[in-house]
Every structure is written in C-alpha cells, then in structure tokens.
Length: 301
View 1 (cartoon, one colour):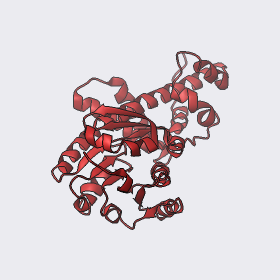
View 2 (cartoon, one colour; view 1 turned 90 degrees about the vertical axis):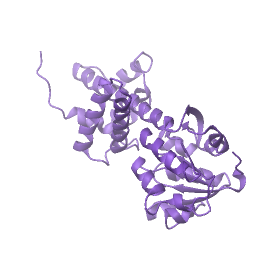
View 3 (tube, helix red, strand yellow; view 1 turned 90 degrees about the horizontal axis):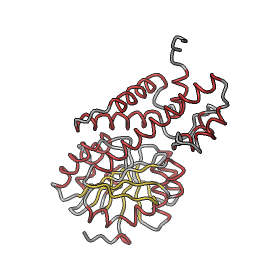
View 4 (tube, one colour; view 1 turned 30 degrees about the horizontal axis):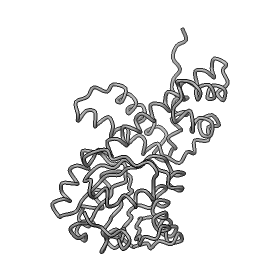
C-alpha cells in the first residue's frame, strides 16, 4: 500500500484526555491534523496546540487519507464512521481508518468488512499507558489488521508510542487491549483487597507495597497505583471506572464468544459493574478500593 505520510491529511476524531495529547503530538511532528470533538473546550485546547479544529466529524474527514478515532467505545466509532452522517461517505477508496479506541473486537471485525466494501481499510490500534504516556509518546500500541496498511502508518504510530505490537488480523488489537485491562483490573482488585486485609491485621500499607514490589505479588497496580492513588485515597489516576468496567465486559464477552470458560473474568467484570453502578461513571478506576471498603464485612471466624 502506497501512502505519502509527508503530505497526508489526518482527521483525528476524539480529543478527550487521551486523544488531545495524542493528536497534539502529531501536530508537533509536522503533520496536517484536523481534529474534531463535540466538546468546545477540547477543540479550543487542540487549536491552542497548533491543530485545526473542525465543526463536525465529516468536516474533519473531508479529503483525509487517514482517520484516527479515539472514542469511548465501538458503538461510538461505528456511529461516527458508518452512521447516517458517518465520515466513511466522504472518504476516498484507499483511505485508512485507525481505531485507537477500546472497542469490542467482534464489532471491529464486522465494521472492517463493511468499510472494506467501499475500499476503506480499517485497522485497530488501541493503546495502553494512560494520559502521562500519551503526553510523552511512550504508549504501548496493539495493532491488528492489514499488514500493508499497518506498515504505511507505522511512522505515525511511532510518534505516539514506543512499544508497537502487531497482534494479527483486524480486531486482534482490541481483543488484546480488553484482555490486558482484565489482567490489570484483576491485579488492582487483588492488591486493594490485600492492603485492606493486611492493614486490619496491623501491617503498614506502605511497607506492604514495598514488599509486594520486590516479591512475586508485584504488578502494575502495586508499582504505580497503590502509593499515589489508593493508600492516600486520592483516586485520581485519570482513567475512569466506566472505561475499565466497559473493557472488562468486553473481555468477558470475548470469552463467551470464543466458548472459553473464564470464571475469574466473569467475577471481575461483575464486581466492577457493581462498583460502576455504586460509584458512578465519573469515578476514577482506582476508587474500586473505596467500593471494596464499603462492602458488608463477613462474619469473623
């Protein structure tokens, strides 16, 4: 696939907490990036970073050869691409859509087939690392889909992340992202429970964290979430409870779709759905600790 990135017009749809720094990095690298977000504040922030903000998704995508989506879920991606006012209708054959959202992998496969009928290539490239790594361009990116299209946009992706993995057919990147977040959420849940149990018994939570981090219990949450967000109960990591719960549902649904027994996945997804219902969509995902703390105490033995 031949694509001249030096003259490519890039539409970036979704300028939220992750999308804004990502799109801004592409602008800083010298690419022509037209952004769109329904939030006026987000559009103004993008313009302040040197980008051009459009008044609609279709206006952003006019004459674009690459469209990047960074939206809440696959339903939002489908609506903006293939809905009644979707941008697919204004894209020329050969255009590449990079869905960097955390979408459901089965839906991604279906959408890729639909867009393929119009000569548009969809690859999925979800990210992991959070806002801080979006700002400094060190995200992990999981790329699924057409190898030639992935190779054509690799310089763009390398501006956004330092760990790029080609995961296989379209949808495989989204599958990997959901499964990664399942493992992450399971680790955070276990770590929060361990701290609560140990603290009740008289252990110091800071000391527990230090021991976990040089022992076999170490995971991402013990390393980067317990001391800054959980122990002080600030719950301000920047990744929402709603997004984590959504990714856990995706992982659980994928297991069911594949016919794989996954009792822990189902249990974790159910627990986080309860936490979402209790704490609300705007709660930080590290507030799972507060949800656990409010659960009824079991009878002492």
